Length: 124
Ligand SMILES: [Zn+2]
Image (cartoon, rainbow, N blue to C red; front, side):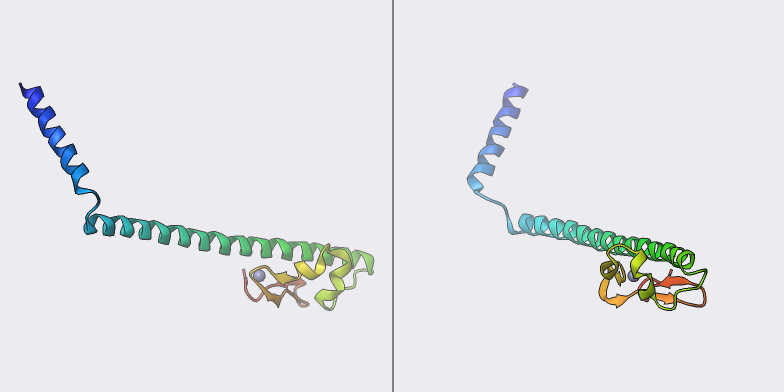
């Protein structure tokens, strides 16, 4: 008896859901809200990852240039390079590497006092 009553109630519920023919406005708004929150989280994560990738690439390029300073000194009797363009023969793909990956209009610079290669965008 109890089983048949539950089955009848479930059947009625299923019948009512089928006959409504769709979702309410509130249900649709909740779904849109959830999708919006998830999209915001994904966009923030994408931005953070992209920014971090640029910073790491820039640091790697600067390390390459600082190795090129050593090669320049070895080839020129321990004389220091005067500008970063002096390192061009020692860095593959110089024209690409000398630009900051985050902003191609920003060029890396050689600090002649410390012989470090610096980027205005990434001062670390
Ligand atoms: Zn940079």
